[in-house]
Amino acid sequence: MWFRVLRPFASLDLTNIYRFSVRYLEDNLKNMFSEIISDANLRAAYLKIVEQFTIEGKSASYHGLDNLLLEHYDLRSEELLLLIREELVSEKEISPALLVKIPKKNNPEKNREIFIYSLKERIKAQAIFQIVLPVFEKNFSDRLFSYRPGKPPYLAAKYFGHRYRRDFSQDYALIIDLENYSDLIDRQLLSGRLEEIFSDQKVLAVLRLFIFNCAYRDGKMVMPQFGLIQGVPLIAEFANFYLSDLDFKYQKLVPFYLRVGDDIAILDQNDDKLEVIKKEMSADLLARKLRINENKLYCGPAKSKFSFLGYCFEGGLISLEQGYLRRIETEWKKLLSYKHLPDKRKDYLLRKIMIEEKNNFNFRFEKIIKDKPQINDSKQIRDCSERFFQIMTKFFYGHYSPRNRRLLEKRLGHLGIFSLYHFYKKFHYERN
Image 1 (cartoon, rainbow, N blue to C red):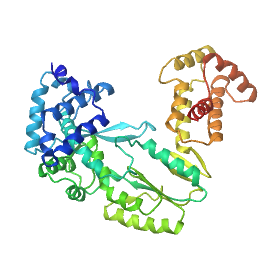
Image 2 (image 1 turned 30 degrees about the vertical axis):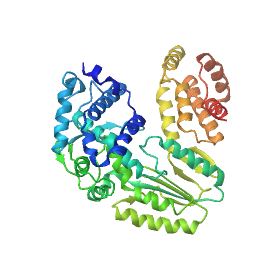
Image 3 (image 1 turned 45 degrees about the vertical axis):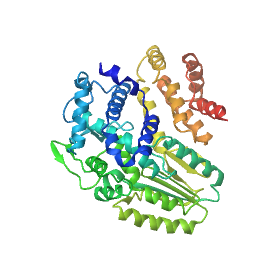
Image 4 (image 1 turned 90 degrees about the horizontal axis):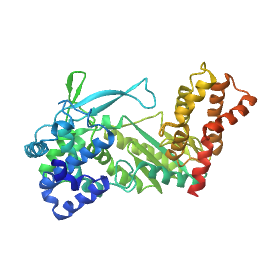
């Protein structure tokens, strides 16, 4: 029943949420809290979570500290929304986020920490986010690319790549990566700065619920002195806003500036000027209790080697980072690790891989190229492509030789496996 009642809101995406909330911002900024707790907004927030969990397959397993799943609310969603409204009005503290450890995608042997909010708190955060988003957007630089409607990180890479290819021989680059950015944000400073853009005290109060919240870690409640407890889109807005004034300050000083979360890139043709900016920005960041990752800091000629946004830049060429190459090579070796099997069994395994829609080699190759569209280092892609066939040759024949490599080409023709370089040429030809 609830789904039929709330169905008109089910298809809201981030862009629609932004448009939806702009109307409220323009109509009555001072009554923003009333819009947050309005029936329409709470229902839209609820259905956004339903939609997200359905798409991501989380509805049957996702839960926070309260252990409640989405299915527990199916028949009493209206009751849940009333409870959420009451708790927002009373400014009740939100439930602690549950900290869990999951294997890293790029290195399953190591874990990364994530915070999981209960469904009730996620709906609260979504309801707040839908209304305050336009206020944050009005106070963000157009050179900020992270968790924003219409400004995904790949656009930052595109703009940077365009400038780099055009002016790398004349430009100097300042590349900054912030160390443990979200874990070092000063909560008090962030809370105070919110008063610059929000006048409604009730809005400020519910925003602070998600700034000064706590977490449940290793059986204990933890209230961090610094840092934000991530896990909902609202926290990303806080992280963006924390340095928004610095974005405006430094983009006025140079011809090219952009920021993607905790990654900052500045290009200018005056190296002395960049040295001054580096020192001044270091001081500004230190005042925010933030630190520059010295291992990833680069300040020098743009034609020299440096990394940014997952790309390696050198001499006008944009290529894959060595760490990324090592990871994909490790993946190939894992898939082709059964060298002791008979040839027929090896053929069977490869055919099995190739019929998997989102796991076959062609899909993986094409995804690498599409995920890194700024690459123009053809030699690196050819070499990487050949490395795959070397691994494949050893898989079938035990060792690599030119003769075995030729035999492999005939064998793979029947399996329909193309090369990484094939997809690279195809992608760039179609783009041009």
